[in-house]
Amino acid sequence: MPNIGSRCHELRIRDTDKNWRLIYRIDDDAILIVEVFNQATRAIPNNVIENCKKRLSKYDIDSQE
Image (cartoon, rainbow, N blue to C red):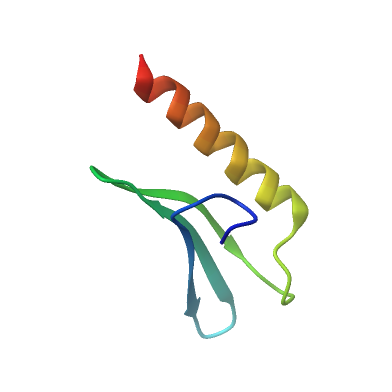
């Protein structure tokens, strides 16, 4: 998912009445679950994309300390 960041991916899970999405990133030492949400449309909502970017940025900053 290059619109969120490098090494980011989306996992789609169909449930009985919902379609779940997991956004995750694969790092050398961890797999980060960035967001889990119920998706009703084909496009990922802009607020989800922005939240993912903020969380990954904060994680990267915090992990350098």
